[in-house]
Length: 384
Image (cartoon, rainbow, N blue to C red):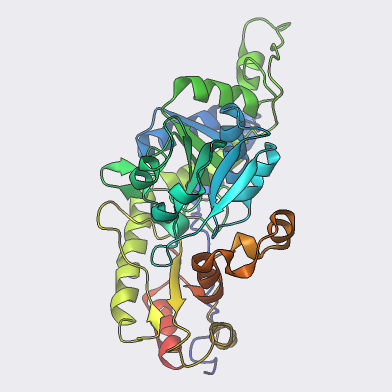
């Protein structure tokens, strides 16, 4: 496959930040208030409304959002937290941050998400929480997971990829007890780095807000704009500095306001991909959920090693040479040195996760692609 016909390299992802963000940033700079303030508050309010949740709390990343959630719930040493074996490493790392133990659960290669049938086998008397990842924008089967967990077990949605995703009539971030979102540049809405934690639990929300700001009893904005200049916050909790800045919130707001359009574009072209690539028997494309809405943060395919013309890595290398970026879906945690060595894991312990790690392949799908870009990707796969 030769480059030349289509000279622009098609990236796996590009942020959809529009020119209006420059005006929003200028307004923040001119205001003199750059840290967490009124723009963060506006971003949280709009995000909560979009999800249909009572509380949305902006953070520095999805990782810190998940850490806040577990810390606020009192997860700590001696506790076990169920984690999918196929996910970005941060999902398990936050459990270690709390001094708790991540217990891996295999995934369903058809959805890339937690396999509810495997969850019950991993539950022990020490299980305090489960993290269900909505991988690539498809919601995990939260109801099925909850049904096999002991009563009172916290369900944390790792919704890093799932802004705008829905299951039935509910939005991601409202399906479990608490949800965590990412605004990394590969996500549909980006703030550069940033995250959001959501919940309908007012007590949990109050604790997370305090923990986000060093454990302070009042926010920086409340303190600086209040009538008592001598007032300092009380500190009754050991917290963290996980605050988002108004600069970041200003960048995210402009995208969040047009989220429906961003999602509709991705949904339309995901359907086009599935139709256009259906004749490639060696390539399994992701399906829409039976109910709800896939957010299509990524379009992750599965290469059938028994039918493919080449092995997956060679396919990816050839596409890259032809100007089409691809990536593996994500990691199988039990194959990573930290988890393999710390917990004595073997490659065959989680066959679903291993297969996903070795055969998944994300192809470009983002809001800056053109019709010609999509056809070029499909033609490149045809030519293998």
